[in-house]
Length: 79
Length: 142
View 1 (tube, rainbow over the protein chains, first blue to last red):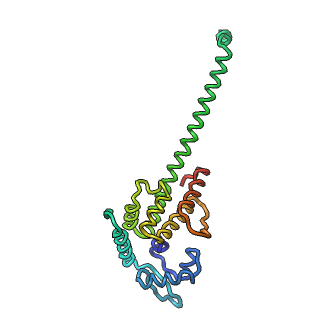
View 2: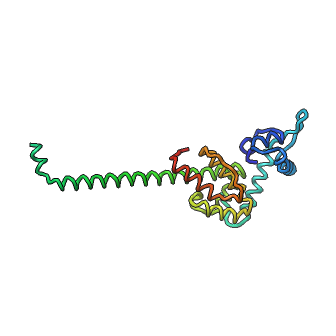
View 3: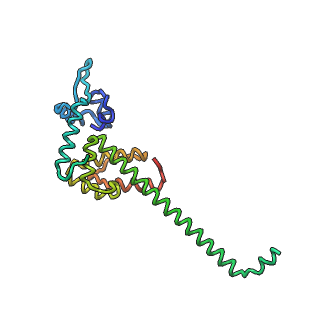
């Protein structure tokens, strides 16, 4: 997620994404799949390749959900 | 005239003055070194805090970053990495190490240090300690 948050316009294959973070495609395939299931990443077929990109709207929603979860852990909410 | 005036000053007085001047000079140097170390230590803390905020923001967003730092409840978030770790772990449990590793990777990158993942358990405070040591020894400013 950090890669996509720092490069919100990134569109790449699983292997390409993995290379960018110094890992193998097989090591991140499950994570990518989970992010696709939660609609934070979207998949598109370009030629023979499947590429993934960030769904910015859904990502913003997810960020809000995470913030709400952390805020719900107790104490006052920050501004 | 000058020669005579000089010869009237007792040699012991000249020697004592020289010693006290030397002592004062040494003390000033020591003080300057201490100040320099303090300045670098403060600069490192600033760098660490900036890295912490940026890393958490990039990973989870602005609101979550603020929420985490609020719950961590440290006046100076980078002042004590061990306490930060304990409190972050208290909030997020094992997920805390994901955030901590992102912070360490970013910190090492900013210091041009090579980050290598630990063979055993990841220890946030140890990595921060190593980065601080490097920063203080090199006097690097980023």
